[in-house]
Image 1 (spheres, rainbow, N blue to C red):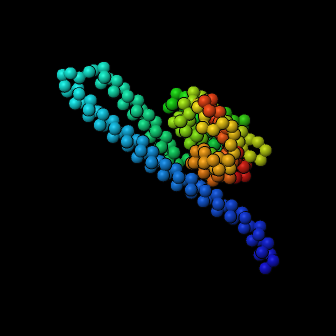
Image 2 (cartoon, one colour):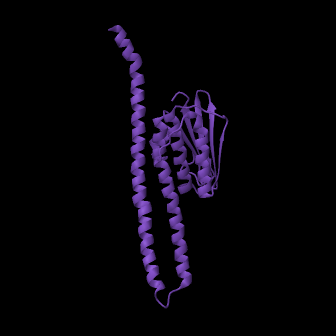
Image 3 (spheres, rainbow, N blue to C red):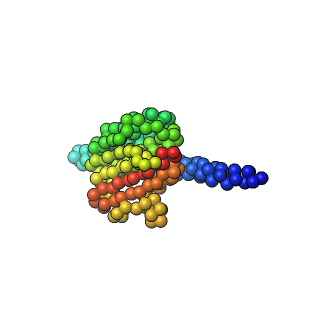
Length: 239
């Protein structure tokens, strides 16, 4: 009995931690799905409906003798801009629901590809650097870190108005460190907030915070309003 008691004391916390991390991963996925559904309904679908209605108005105007070609061209230009933005949004949604199957050896190439695609599609200057040529991570950790980079870059495109972004992945004592920094408008707060402080203040991207928790990581955000933001995610090397 004493042996069983000692075994439970030793193994119990480990089992609980595994359960907790799985629960957090499931919660992050649920939050992500709900947000995707909301973005499709409130964003893409509403834009398409609005564009359809505006096209109907332009069609009626074009059929009259007193139609103004310059005004019609201006309206078409606005619609083109909105549709182009929604194309980017749909591409983001597809990438976020698309499975990421990779082992740790493919990890750096995957992060580099995510950053390169962001640069091509948005025109925002973006770089990825790492102090290692090969990083071996558990598959679930590598997959979540890739999702975190995707999520952070989506936020940069939609909210920061940045001209440049740097994504860096580096090793440090007992952990890996992911840094994403941009020169955009930053968050509404000034200074550096830890994950606990972000939670207490109800600040920071919810999905990103949940994904960081799901791999046992720690998030900190440094913000200078009007000058950019820096996200730091520390991931235990044995996550």
